[in-house]
Image (cartoon, rainbow, N blue to C red; front, side):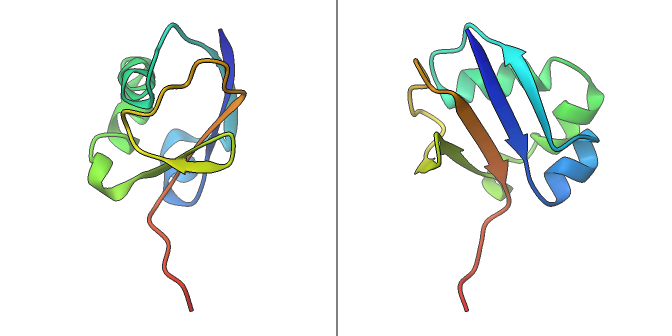
Length: 83
């Protein structure tokens, strides 16, 4: 299935692009991360420490085990603070 993957802040800088459309067979965010990390060294480096990465599935905060079937957009970004 095709899914739009968005990268924010330092993730965008490390990967070198703000978004990409990927074909995936992943069932969960964690499986998608594994597929992305296997693409090249930039993705692997950006997604190496998942404790420093948050994710949203179709603009809803999610965890790494969240299902992505039918999702149109997966976004990766660093933790946020309020203020």
